[in-house]
Length: 584
Image 1 (spheres, helix red, strand yellow):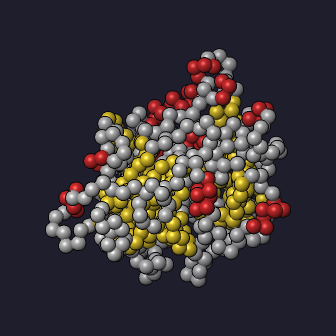
Image 2 (cartoon, rainbow, N blue to C red):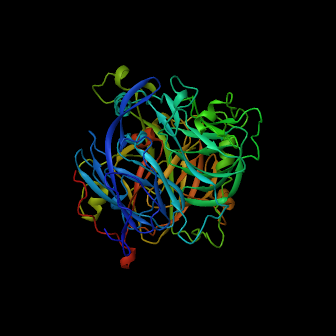
Image 3 (spheres, rainbow, N blue to C red):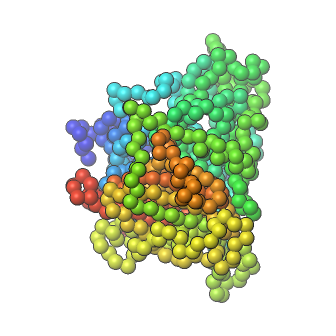
């Protein structure tokens, strides 16, 4: 496992990560551990017993090796979200797409290749709904000898937003799949694993960030929630966004952020010369859902953490200092309401790439592969023999589904897509995912024929020539229920060159594309009954998953796969599989 000239940072039985400039090996144990939240205790799947899991810290361009040993009772895979893994989809992690799951008692050595990512990403389980508790931050520092494109922060703190169910998450999944309806919403949101002051039995564990006056802090914010886009704000404090999805942005000062599941945001917090309210040194960080779907259930609770100003020259420890002050102030006027579409869109459309000499961008201009894909909520008829009232809880006794271009994706279960592609095994996938909707209609109309709601099933993929410049337009529809969709592409970052509401009109909307400094992301929020356009160069050979990062939509079938063919030269060709790929 040598990389460069030495093997560095070897830890035994630990998943602790240091700033390493050479290859490093880490031991990662998947195991169950008891955790108490909301007045009750349950066993959850964790990495080394930690929730959230340990933080990975690397420098730009590093390669690390992670030895994943499954000591739990369930199959699992680990995905390195936003890490492009050049030529190496073998360690990307989505179950039955690039690997078969790691079975209980088995081990898989994953090679994680960082390239031009810089900022914050994250890792998480990518099998069933296990990422609810199996996830953690990835901090990617500038290369040695370089620095941040903003003033160096005093400290850097991961802020991981998540969801918590009192029930076992796999029981939630099973009941959801059997019912054919919507899943039970979470019982709480969390910040760094804690629900916060507004939930029962939660106040003592509330996460507290103790800060000093007149200091700059880098918050590495991650939305690890399963099914909700979130608003996040800090009372009486602004945030300056400087990065998204492992790429730097032009500084954007704001009193809140909108962050989709899968996304990461780097934001600078400048503390005051003295606390903004001299009579109170505590301020709530708060997050709640952004949800616009009609008749779509969602968790309408609010999670909090506490920003605590340290008393200068204080002789007591920070925990005691936190107890000396009154009720924290809440961001009543800064945290948008759950259906505030204007605020959500104003934030995401204000992001711009840094696009300077040290951090250049390269937006594809000459497009030779156009893809237009609807993203829809659909229904399937209740299967014959089912009791409609008991087992098909979708609209009018149907089963809810989801699709891209009217194809509801079906996962293979005997062999993964990557292995089938690499070894030329026929009959696993069909390479005919459509590049245009098979049915044309008023996608965002208020009244749509019921006949449009039923999609086709299939394991459909789209093959791309190496080096092709791809433009992909996501078009949301109002079938069954219009809602925002955070779409994530593995293996690539892409430029988000345009957003809009309503039906995409190429003659009109392409004129408004930002081809100068669009943000570089791996997850894009497609607005409810609207569209978003992304562009990328297909220069990473392999098999790469594309899906909605709302977990219920992924389960329903809002997925597809891009297969990027090899280029002519060795450095443009897929690496061979490692010897210990998990068997099915």
